Image 1 (tube, chains in turn blue, red):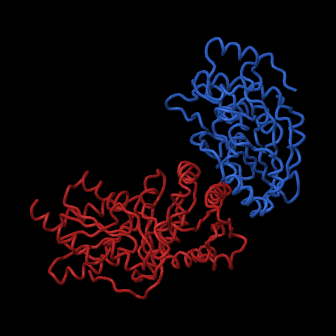
Image 2 (cartoon, rainbow over the protein chains, first blue to last red; image 1 turned 180 degrees about the vertical axis):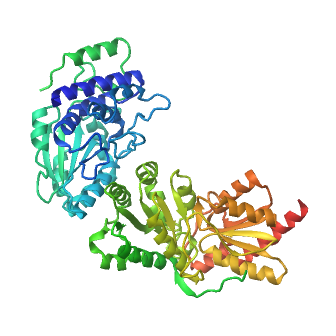
Image 3 (cartoon, rainbow over the protein chains, first blue to last red; image 1 turned 30 degrees about the vertical axis):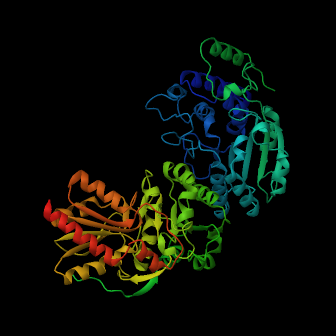
Length: 271
Length: 320
């Protein structure tokens, strides 16, 4: 399967899961679908049959509300059967709205309360350095999440310790839960902030598979520096009536909306 | 059973420091982190001996907790060190989600707990930490009574898999447990046996409970003193066995009554063996700046107050 095809499947699963579970955050999943697809298809060294393999690359979804996307990609990569995805947000299911590690192979950490994932990623990167292991740690964060001060503590620490095995990927879709980022707490000049904190910064089109693959294929991106990839994305990407609409942070597609969304995804071609 | 006598006087935080150093030698997976308080936490010996396994995170406690959680996924056993105040309330969300719910093998080591922090005042004198931590599922909560026991507890929690909160303090206090005693998580220590009243104490109040038992002995009251060093999981059986024998209890702790040891014991007693109970602790107020012993006096965390509560509970038992 190509990353392009995987991204499409992640989107289809996410729409179905959030519709069936009547849950939120479909727009936030759609904006990272291509990033997840490239990571799991081409970048991460993981063994689905052996999720606790010691030398695996570590992946943390810090924006835990987009858990449906990770569940979908793990299922497609055969960490568990895809059929189980339809239990998302149902009573008794492990597949809660915000990502949970409990009973789900391949999930390193439960998140949901924002601003936690990067620090945990720092700990992992530090452990790898101590043990002279070459596994890498990837943390996907949201833009709104960068309001949390704990992230900036982690950003300070990781450049001080030259953690070049740590890669943060920011889903910069520029919309947070109920308003645009710029009207909430502006982040610009965003890249400059990381540069001044001693990080290596790459800016990519977060929906361009080749661009993502190219950027992520040579870790460390910069020797002796942690790297952040600011991925310019579109919230709700792939479904015309969801794109760039704050409404789809919380709303789940139902009835005719669901049919339209799935129909659009079937014919979707990402670059 | 003969009541113990102090071997010497030492601070419990130094017991932690000594235990940590020993762990550094015996367990290569042990890693230590501090948020700019290595000296106060007595972590500097470990820092000097094992610089590659020691991390200064700066004044950034939230990040420290997250890093510790991450280190566990990488197979390490991280010990975090800062004041009890900054080990709990300040980073509760990090602990709740990334350590307790995620069930990560982090050892949260917390010094300067309670009023005996002294002159720094109310902002630093946390009296709510045991309650905050015992409420978290998966969290083990330990409050040792002296230097030797804090050292033994430090060694024991490294062997135990799961998140632990270890609470200790700043001042020099009587050191009376044997340096050879092994620390068993969840097993209460019966320090002296008695038949008239059970005194359940934790942390710095354990020695005061022993002194109270001596005073009571002279007045003809035979008190049983039990050191509850593990607040969670609490030794329910030891507590029930004791109160079934004595028929009444007094608890003593350097903590708010709300959410503390007394609270847990009250739950056990009311559910399984309702009998009169009195509590020594801080009664819904913040602390203040002052000399440690004078603060303990002002807030009633004294031998005299334990004795007074014992007389009161025995009187209540007589009427019930």
